Amino acid sequence: MSSDPWGRVDETGTVYVRTADGEQVVGSWQAGSPEEALAYFERKYDGIVVEIGLLERRVKTTDLSAKDATTAIDHLRQQVDEHHAVGDLDALRKRLDALVATVEARREERKVLKAKQTDEAKHAKEALVAEAEELAQSEQWRSAGERLRALVDTWKGLPRLDRKSDDELWHRFSHARSAFSKRRKSHFAALDAQREDARKAKEKLVTEAEALSGSTDWVTTAARYRDLMTEWKAAGRAQREAEDDLWNRFRGAQDVFFAARGEVFAERDAEQGENLKLKEELAAEAEKLVPVKDLKAARAAFRGINERWEAIGHVPRDARPKVEGRMQAVERALQESEESEWRRTNPEARARAAGLTGQLQAAVDKLRGQIDTARAQGNNARADKLAKELEGRQALLDQALKGLEEFGG
Image (tube, rainbow, N blue to C red; front, side, top):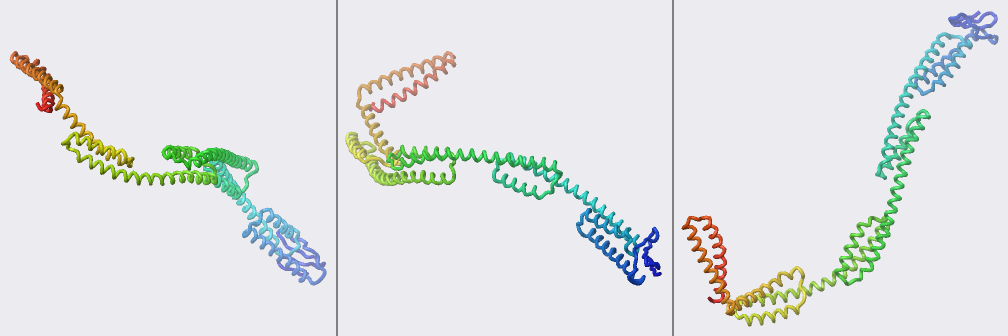
């Protein structure tokens, strides 16, 4: 009979292994010596030890699932329980029990981690839904649309929740995107309609502008072009390509008209500039008639100057008031000279002036007497009242005396 600390072989070739529950039959060996039998079953034990060690490392260092780890443990435990190896089988059971505990602990850790990840994913998706629902009301069509597309990519990267929760959140998320898309589509449809209306309105404006481009009614047509520009701005924008084409036509028609007007005005300005020089020379000639010495000769000379003035034609508008004012000043001086001469040589006017002066002088003398009487009587109130009346009469008398002097009196 042959034996070692963990097993033995009896006379019949039966191999036993020693365990805490006593000896267990391992198998029968007839092919060789008892030592070879024990060595064979010890090698089987060593093989189980190697498999357990490998499984322990996989559990600790890889993401081996609890299910796969449990299956592997059960397979090794079956080998240990079937007693087809010689060695410390109880130690192997303890290692397998410890491995079961490790796997369970890992299972709980993963369960907690998964619950945490699920909770985080739920909050993340709820935040995405809230932002999507807010963006659904936005009118920042480009930026909001880009952001919604980015939210979809973020959603796809998050873990799935339980079916009910995930479906409910996805329904809200999808509804918000659809609502935004519908509003954006409606907005751009309305915008397209507005742009089409603007295009039609601007087509009419361009047609009129082109029809006016050959006009020579400079004032009326220029005013109409200003009105057309106001209408153009009020019409809104057409589609970009149409807008650019219509604007080029509209602007081109105006350019044709204003270029032609500019040439005509340039010629007119040159002519009016020459006219201004001539009228300034005439104004200087007229100004030499003042002060008037010989009224009859001055009048004749002024008429001749004025006839030449009228024959010259227009001058630049901004220069007109000054040069015309010079001629008008000379004309006023002639008129004043005529009026002075008439008053001086008109006997009736002189008599009227003298009569008025006499009346005013009598009234003044009378008031002075009344004032003296009132003060002598102590009636100062009446005297003051009469004094104010005297001031007015005296002013009229002074004016009348001045007029009488003009008659040489």
